[in-house]
Amino acid sequence: MQTNDVFAYAFRDGIEALTSLVPGSFHTTGPAGTLLALTRSVIPALNPIVVPQSEPDVDEVATLAELADREAGPAPWSIRLRGRPGEHLREVAARHGRTTATVQPFMTLSQPPLSAAGRVRRIKGDEYKTFATVVAGVFGAPPELVSAVYTAEVLDSPQVTAYVAETGEGEPVAAGVAITTGDHAGLANIGTLPAFQRQGYARTVTQALLSSGATHFYLHADEQTTAFFERFGFATEENWTMLTQ
Image (cartoon, rainbow, N blue to C red; front, side, top):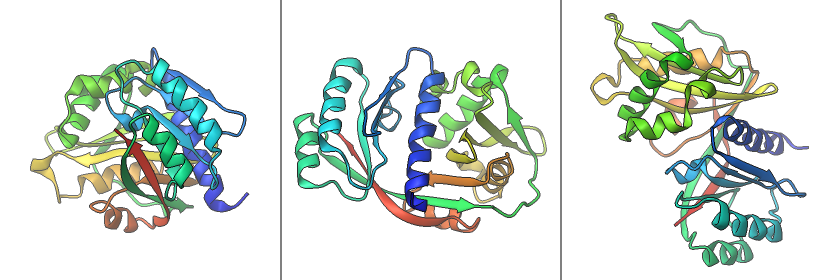
């Protein structure tokens, strides 16, 4: 299996691991390896059909899209795949109203250099509201939306590592999380509250996550965050597409 394939399947496994921890979630994997994972969040990216193959099995995607329509209820779901969707996959997505395409750089890093972090600490389940408040403030979302996914049970899982960075007065101002499967970890939700940006807090959180035990890391970035992660040695290996309504 090629390196990009290994990371793509690790991403699928990370989504499946997170979904399996969220109360009331649903997930299933087709024979060809395509995953349907429904956390039932209002965030489409957290209710994806994940296509890890470089050549999608369009029939399997179609079957899982029908299942998503039945199982997701009011939760918006998405299709996340490597590269650009071909004509037949676009037709399947369009039948289900998934016509908006967002390109996401998929960045990877192996054997990161260890570096000292600043004032940062790991968040466990009993502080799930603290984590939700920071992440919600970073991304402009209601805290209850975040805490519905990152519950106390999720944050207490050995597969989940969440950190907050704090000011000298102990105020949490930045956060991030890693989902680990085997020796791969997916990083997500890294950011700093607007009033405290450009002071190194997100860097501190990222350093802590890169020191959390895995040896290979991946994440989906965007135009605004690609350069930030490149400073840690991440490189864009390929682009993924997310199809939503």
